[in-house]
Structures are given as C-alpha cells and as structure tokens.
Amino acid sequence: MRGSIALVGSGEYLPAMAAFEKSLIDDAIAHGKANKFVQIPTAAGRESKDRLEFWKELGARQADLIGAEQIFLPIFDRDSANSDQFADAISDSALVYMSGGDPHYLAQTLTGTPVWDAIVKNWQSGGSLAGCSAGAMVLSSEIPNFRFLKYGPTPGLNVIGNIRVIPHFNKFFKWIPDAAAKVLMHAPEGSILLGVDEMTALVQRRGKDFWEVNGQAKVHVLQGAPAEQLFAGQSIKF
Image (cartoon, rainbow, N blue to C red; front, side):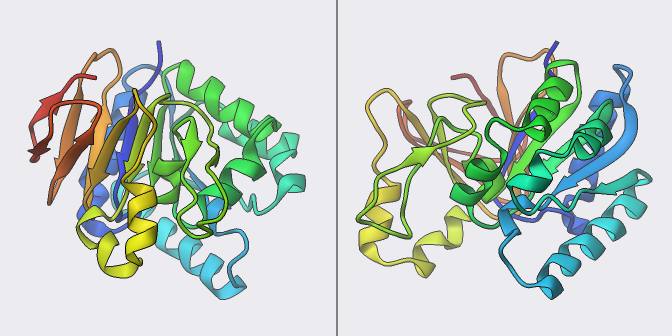
C-alpha cells in the first residue's frame, strides 16, 4: 500500500515543522520502514556550494531533532540521478523529502532515472513522500512556467495527477508580477488548483482517502472543487 504523501508550502527542515516531519516518518516506521530521513536537494542543484551546504546542515539539525538518520543525497544533475548507489540508499526509508528550488529542473533531472524509480518504489511500498515548494509543484502532471512566460508548462513527475500546487501562497503574489500570477492561477479544465501557505502542509496519510491540513496557516482551494479555505485539522476529498 502506498505511503503517506505531503504537499508543503514552505518550511522544510525548520523546527516548526519537525513534529509534522516526524509524523510522516512514524507513519512509515509503523509499516516496517527504517528510521531514515532521505533529503533530495535536486531542485537547488544549480545553486551555489554554500547554499547547498546550508540545506545539508539544516536537514542534519532537523534529523537530529526528530531522532532520525539523515541521508542527504547530492543529486544535483542527471549523472547523479542515474547513480545506482544513490537509488539503493533510498530503499526502505521512512521519508523521502524533495526540497525547494526550481521545479522544472527537478523534474527534468529525475524523470526516467534509477533514483526516481527508487523514490516511487519506496512510496508505493509504504514509505512517506513529501515535497516542499518546488518539490510539491513537481508532483503534479504539469508544472506551469511562471518564470519564463513565453514558454508553456513542462511535464511534472505525475504522482498526484491533475492536482496543482501554488506554494508560499500567502506570500507568493507579493514576489511575482501580475502576468506570472495569471499563469499560476490558470489551470487546465479538470485540474484542481490549490494554494498552500507557508509553514503549512496538505497530507494524505497511508490508507486514507482524504487529505488533511497540518501547520500554521491555510490551504486554499482555488479551482476544480468548491472554493474554500482549510485550516489545520480540516480535511478534504478530491
């Protein structure tokens, strides 16, 4: 049976999200997975070495806080995503977490690789899978191209199908121009468009047929289902 899956607006590896991340690990440990917290920084793979080291150290502190073994996999390009060694390291992990950066680069780097195959296999056998910001956007079938408006959407990793996520929703539209906002707010007919605020997650637990809000703020249903705002503890079915 598939494990829990989480769409996070922001806050990966921060103390305020520690209890939530531990809950995802506990979900998988309860069904036989090892207490391993695999961190996939691929979306930030084109950032500076200092920035990548920041993510590694942040993840290490979080893993220590929640009592899990950190496995930080330096998967920054297609060559590393094709590594059987990195793919093997994912096996039987309680949580695989894809952090933020560029969602298009993340999808292009992982698609069709042993690492992505290992991530899917681990999730389908009961491990938890989480994506934050770019990591959440990439789980959809398509990723809107709001940075380069003349280009259309690019293929996502298609884990959650027609559900699209706008992360950092309570801050996003302060950062980007109106034209880019229009791209994000337009999804194809039949899609479900969600805004997930910072320090907030929407999670479907293992064996459940509904999604539940966790965290400090809200999840906004924008398109494809009745418009509403959901707070921590509230749930929804799609």
